[in-house]
Image (cartoon, rainbow, N blue to C red; front, side):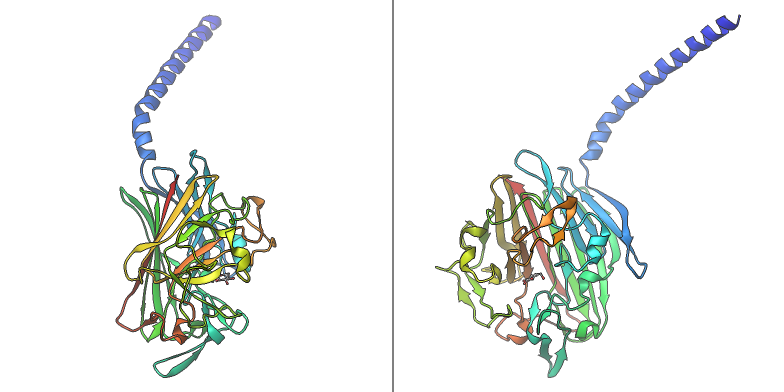
Length: 388
Ligand code: BGC
């Protein structure tokens, strides 16, 4: 009797299992289509990234497009933490230098992936005159002011304004209120940065700002790129084109002299694709210069193109800005260990910072960086990613 009951029970269980297994299989089969359709959508996930020493929570957003491109953005410094893109064989790598964990971003690092402001790049002696008033900024680069000062926009927690996906885009909009007098700047400046990843493999960065007192603004993203993958050697073999016939020569402190010079016939000429390393030894200290874009700014136009032969990765940069800082990672010296334990040595990354020209507040001949109450600062930069 017991054996029979057991036998029946076993049979019943087996049958149930078969039915369930069958159903499961069927369900999985049925779910396959919507699931793969799901994979083709733009998506955003959010996770905790850490906490600042003053206990502010910092989050990390991952924006993914249907082709698998992933951009990670944190609201600390409105930082682009990583950008994973495929090479010509479809192998993905992160092409942005930075850190795996939040702790790294709290260290004194050279602006990996951050948004720099209120004024990106240098202001000579940290001083300028605006409407007859002299303003004295924090000096944090010798005698000069660099990238917003001691506590620039890269070292603050930005407010998350909006996180949105559409059929074609995934975006995160962050905002920051820089108070009147912060780092010496006049006016309460309300600014925002919106990162948008598109289904067409573009990462768009849009900047906006408004002030209640006349001030100066110059915002940019300070990502260090290595199209062979972060940490995978130096960038001297990358080919670069800059859509600029002119640049702004600098003095020993890297402050523009005020001259606007032709690049033609000099190692500064990148009007055609040239490897970064081909003439770098002829440039004292390496490239760290502002190029005057041929577009003149104001409308979205091609500013730069970079090609890395071994992986086939191509990055094109479009911007509404009149200038671009080409920095060849000259000060990286192997003292920083970044993602996946990679050591960032000299020239292991390059920056292409779309911007207004350095020291513009003291150079009336340069395009103006003045923002008045009632005006809207609005700029955009688009990174187009592809392979060849
Ligand atoms: C500047 C470099 C500087 C680097 C890191 C770049 O934008 O042009 O001179 O070393 O940022 O601070």
